[in-house]
Length: 419
Ligand SMILES: [Fe+2]
Image 1 (cartoon, rainbow, N blue to C red):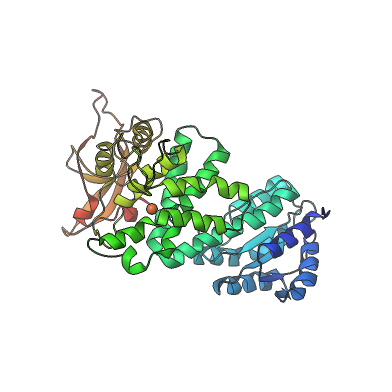
Image 2 (image 1 turned 30 degrees about the vertical axis):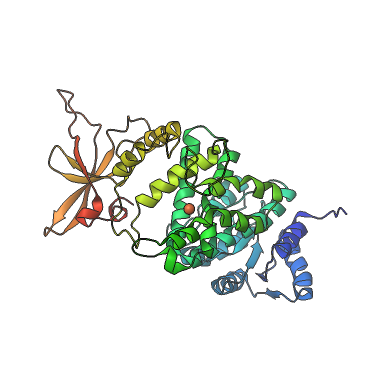
């Protein structure tokens, strides 16, 4: 049966179907219809609805509820949204999930509200305290709005389950997603394909929620039985993806690569099968970025991370066996010969960390943040120098890399200096 709904009602209904447990809001045109719909339906379903005394009241209730793990939502319109922004910055800094819908108002308001002038920046640039970033989705149709409210919430919540289980796996999954998107973009994949690839990266290790932490974080060698438990996680990732509340079409697109991410280019690895068809493109991308992120991170069972340039050299030795040689070349080309975070010694005797690889450079002349030694044990951040700068006259490079080191050997955490 088809039901015709207005956009505001459709958003409210989508939130209810996505499992919204609590709604707090304050009426303001043109979003008041969402509030009216929720006022009627939420109590019928035995869920929480409160009309707050103001937008400030509503957003602070949202903050409190989100901190308890409740699926909570509010809606407002542009001038109400600006009132909520301070608390939004707290919510963002606390990393608690909630949904805030801005049914934008163009027209009457303080100083008149023009969409191009206020709303876009209001949504994307924040307005509260600090440099926080919001996940902003901007649907253009009612159907897209409904799909986003239902899909993305389930997806983000699933990810937070992974974070609850093991913080490292969560961080690793976000890194894999970012690196996969960067590599995908580097080889020219379309925007829609990149989105799907990014979700594959986020969920590739979802099956690790089933692995007991004592095995997942074990120091020392795993027994055969423990390794068998670890090996199950690729298939379990697929099982968990199948359970996400999202359209079947999306789920079918994001299952294969997590299943394949420990299958090597030559089809060794796990899960073992008799297949002869090659690993999919997404699977081959995940294998590369997964290994790169894993070996360049410190873990409980390996206190020292391998430096990024060393990791790329090690991976190159297995090109054509573990990794797709062409994709690996593209990955190295993307990161540069000295990837960001590499500790280098320059021919001037200075030490520094590679902080940027300009796109137009050949990868051998990055920007380097100089480290100034202090009391022989620690370092402070010095100036950032550009290794592509040449002397005039003469044309020789002012500084060049003479050696690379593993930052861990010097007790240096690159992120402290270059972020
Ligand atoms: Fe994995």
